[in-house]
Length: 284
Ligand code: GUN
Image (cartoon, rainbow, N blue to C red; front, side, top):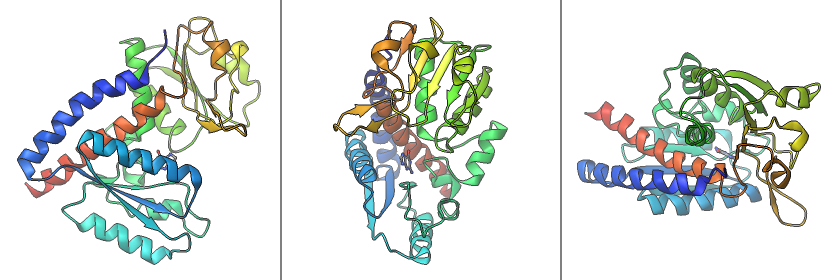
């Protein structure tokens, strides 16, 4: 079974565009997303332009704030505070990575938790640990959606995540714990990776190491979700899983591209709609 993220994202888009239209009728404007893009990281330029295009497709207003690589900490914090205080702004996202002179944690924690569509503020990460989240990182939400398409009830299964990032591995481990799976998180210092991954009913590769997961890492019948997306020296795009090998062993697998990627974008739009509901609940 190929888990077709592009198709699931299109299904989600049908629901979300209707919600956007209803919000526009109720409040006189569409949900709005503001993205801060600092510097010229080539990956970030591609991601941000894709997010902007997709926002338009969903009926969401998107504004990109292109800021110079050398911008001061104070200027970034002032802009975020301005956006926090604006009733016209629903979602705020600071594209990562940031230039070395800026402290990402400080900058992210300046975003109002109600507008934090990446779910990366200390408040939203803390709520996620408690199981009372409002806004959760988009890629983990996309992975959980795909898993539900594989099996309605994943309770009791062994889930192994390869990668411990704050954006994906850590929040996803919490969502999987809340879904009653038994979670193992592996990373670059893990001894005998294969021993862990071979126990996985659900294997999630989110380490950014192209084709790290080979057929010998995968238990027959597992569900394999590939979050990786690396640009190789020949210009091609590669996931963290050797798809051509693993597809014959797994029960289900996501392709790269058109697996997790479209779901991440769809959940960014979902979070922006949620953020508008959050801010308007405060006004009402
Ligand atoms: N850089 C790469 N992926 C992401 C993402 O999902 N959010 C942010 N803010 N930065 C990123």
